[in-house]
Length: 194
Image 1 (cartoon, rainbow, N blue to C red):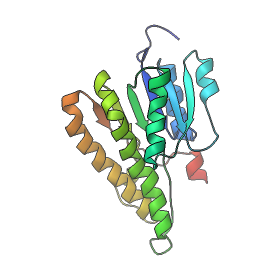
Image 2: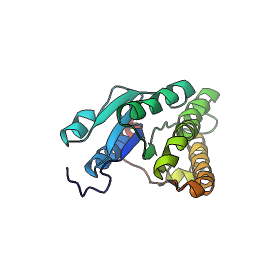
Image 3: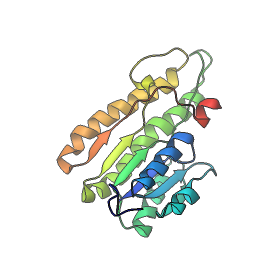
Image 4: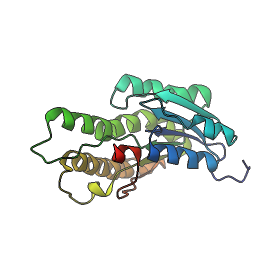
């Protein structure tokens, strides 16, 4: 920990922090000096690793598709750390199979976590990000840029995230809030393995 860390004094929220991608992002934010709220849906945590680096960390159980739980999650960093500077929307759900094999509940689950969750978390944090010229990063996918067979639900949700990101970037520019969406290819993550 050094006072020259680029994110020293900043507070980040990372959704999906119990997974490989979200956990890795949370660790890197801490390494850069940020205190981190790890929003998880399951019991996997990287909280101890972040605390060992000398940064403050808190784990919050949240379903990002539930407005009340998202609002409660946003209260955590404000209560404990007093601010929110960075929001990483990394929570994700995946459904793979032909369009004829997928059903409505598959569609709803993927859309609720990926698209709706990104919207709800962004909307809940924007008023606080305005105070600090904050940043929103929506973790999308190459599936949000190109089509792939057997990925209709997932691809649609990631295209939705990219559209939301572009709209937010334009709308929030006057508030000095930066909004981006990296679109990685296949990551050897726990979600992909499952």
